[in-house]
Length: 233
Image (tube, rainbow, N blue to C red; front, side):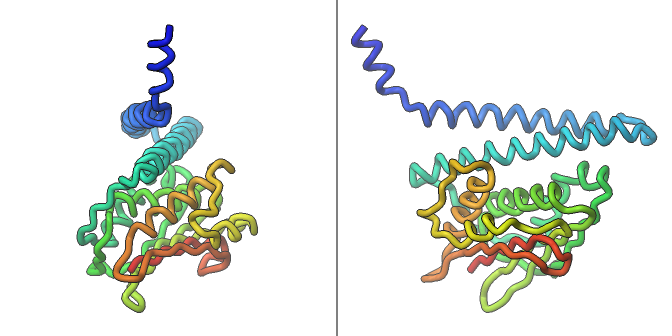
């Protein structure tokens, strides 16, 4: 009996949870691919079925993003958040994000504008920044009505990326959270807290000298809705 209790005490629940999240993420990736394959087989005139498939794909994408965030946060607790910096074409990064959400944007007739110089490159962790931008785009798709705008440019030796939508904008609580220090975040307060914490974790892992990445949230912009801005040194 004592041996069993000793084994139970040594069980690292967070490691078990991380392993389970990893398996679920892999299954979700297969599910997303199956949903995309199914969408190609549906007749063009069956709008109801196509809308349902697009909605299921969108929700599965949100779940996948949450699982990826959980795994990254777990690794950060181990001081092992993987950062692999390499040169990245920002236009390719944006196209990859839009491609991952194309099924939903096309079915819902959401116009996506990309404004970035095709030659703009930056040294960053493309996988982590993709996850960050993709999560912001998923939220923009949820709250926007008909248009989303992705833009990027270099300014004062920083890469500035923005995701804008034409929705109602961020609530004041979320704007306040975006100004909090990383140590002040309470990720137990639902998906909003987790998403912002995850974004701050990624950008602050990108540093050059004394400069670190930053995020900011605001309302207005060119489309009148929410504006999510990322600055990387």
